[in-house]
Length: 245
View (cartoon, rainbow, N blue to C red):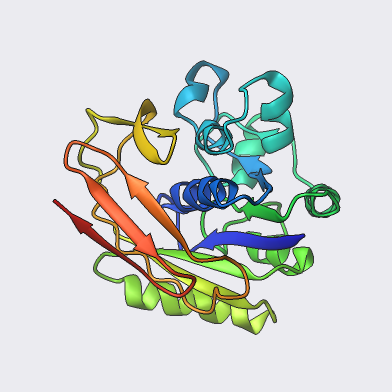
């Protein structure tokens, strides 16, 4: 099984949509995929359909049940805070070894690919002494770093990439995801090769994702989106370009 840890330079950058798109496309390229987002904060059962966990389950065309939610995201917290603070609000705590064991158990499965999505940025605290970066290092998997397109992203990207590299973690690729919170009246779903209406808001799909050194991880494939204005994105293992019309 090929395992990739999807990390980010910050929160709200686009990790989940990149992870979902990769998982969905790999499956439709004939590969078997498992996705984990072990830790999620800001989660409520009442708003599950808008959660990152729901998006990832939909990308796998998996039924949304208590069992599948538990398998995807075993550590869920209500407060939209860093995991350590969100856990403390509920008189709970996280244990890095338990999270790593969960990922290793998943990596021992029969799927072709395992995509592990982190939480927040690479330096977000998980416990009072561990960060997402510690989790990444212990998982011993190459990282796909998702970064934003905004003023200041160069510094944020280089800082995150440097922190990852200093821990001996391979940066398998960098995805530049310029996502604008625009078309909120539209919704997305994964459906027979296109992305249409469903239960999570449509971020403006003016995507230009750049992947480097992914040739050993992902085959060449095409990603098609459908929205208020149609958008097609065709990309190889090393580059994704997008045109909207």
